[in-house]
Length: 357
Image: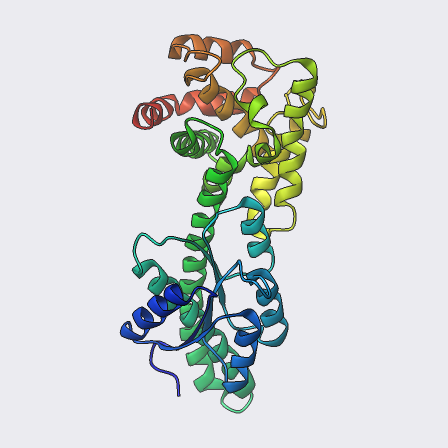
């Protein structure tokens, strides 16, 4: 019999951490079983279903990704939360692609983070089970079940909102990993998000697009994870060969983000934010409105941030100088329409710059 908060299976080959998590979750009101390996975890499912699984990624017999795949095949509705002590970008991407419900980085600053993640996962599993039950009995009890279904749909909307927040947290983690070689990672991510949001508002775009570009734009340079640090941090001008290598980050970003539905806008931005309005950009040399609007917006936001930020190879330009350079590129590097949106929201852009120096 499940407790009110649900049954949890904790999987980790480290005995001490497994014991800590088990005891903590029991105190929080969960019924907890534990396993020291992926194979033992699979055997545990013979004792009955679990509302969620909390598993380490790196284990000797089978890694957490493989366990995730196996459980998805046999117990598709069971949410799996993966834990890792090394937030590697490729592992995070694989976890998301294979359907991990959440992704936690050890050591945990507070065990309550684990408890909240497990609670969300258990609620998610509960809602899915209830939804199936509603569907099976709908023909016999149409009116009553319709009322219950409406209530369930409201719960599902809450669940989707929770998932959305979890997705945003994943995006922040991936963005920080992608810019690990940038000396201004945290504030750069925040500025790019706000600059892109303000430009979109200046264009009077719908709120859904504004919100989407705000959380997608920080991943514009995710492909730089594949560029050698010696090139990214070079204080002088890049050689022709080095610049060709640098340019590949757009294509690599496109490859990394392909196949992740909630990151489709980020993928679009990663491949297009170095295109130029006159068609002389890269990697595809498209021009005008052939460039996605999101790419045209982020291109301007990225250049403004680059001009007004100090880097290892240059000082920050004064705001007046940066704005003059941008105006000179109207119709060449930048879309004139996007520039109008930028200047309509210039006060808000400058306030963002001041806030996240």
